[in-house]
Length: 461
Ligand code: 5AD
Ligand code: SF4
Image (cartoon, rainbow, N blue to C red; front, side, top):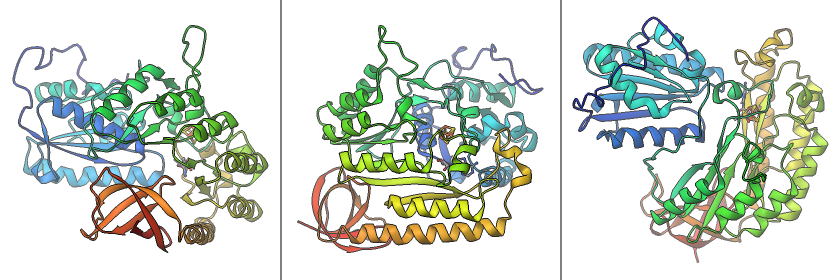
């Protein structure tokens, strides 16, 4: 646990323990940065605050409490947090009773720095103690600002989530990551892998379905390692088993999951996907680089050939599979030829879409020490544009190939731009806009009529 001059001893009695009034009737606003894991953590933060009697509002101006749930994966996230905190100072000056809490990965990473740089923050909490937020707010109310960062989680938290979408839900199956990709700060912030028991995951999915959910996304930093840390009477549950068990929950229509690691993605999982009706034809397989030297320097545990072998195997087992990926451009020392190797693997893999990132050195990671090999930012930007140009063409071609197909869609209700249009999502995770009204949460069929670079248009059939 971090100690700092302003930190209040955890043992102080809270308002609740002394039966003083809580935050009932007060309002909160949460701003979330980063990945789906963080989005889901924010739902749980909302769940905790609502259980304490608070209600959500749409803007900081109306809020009694502002929570920033931060991300640290790339450097621009740092700058955005401190920019946001700068704006919040003006709010706090105008309304001293406003409470500000900062949690998530960047809080975990920066620990006491957050309050050194922004002393007007009331509570700094980390990735391992979300469940403590209400108590920490109580402490801050009474005794002044508090920072509490734990080094690890004692268990995977099972907290009530307040979901914005009544039909789709995230389900955490594991936390942490035991890999050591040299660019990645996640293992140092989210700790060692810890899986939830399959029975706990399945019970949560059953509860969600009873509540109206038809689609779940199973979340883990590295889902292929699921279960390795568990011992169920001498047996370790595998991710493939979990997919089958979740797939057997009656009333559940769709399962997505993210993310597998290419080095561990195997035929068993692909077959479990194929055999389990609810598991959708979508796989997010992060490539990171197509160069064998760069992949080795990243400690990814596979080379280009093995990656392409996994892609081939997955498409053989799941012919309708849509494939997405993550790619980093400008890893230290990346030569023009090595970047070309990435373009080659991208062309060969024919991803449906890719999340592309410019390498960002993260403190404490091995790659951040390779300073002599950092690449000229102009060169990286030019490569980045070439990569996104190529992938955009492939994505558009993939979309064009769906024209004339009938796709099963899950309605998300009216599209953001036009009330007369329903926005649906396919089992391949593509957005299809369809004229007409289909209630959110309903499954329906549509024929694709027009392909756009990043979405599709269809008509009801
Ligand atoms: N710089 C750039 N991209 C990164 N990612 C992770 N760490 C970094 C970094 N330091 C990307 C990887 C990962 C995705 C979630 O974020 O591609 O798969
Ligand atoms: Fe980071 Fe690699 Fe773990 Fe993914 S698998 S969270 S990239 S260390």
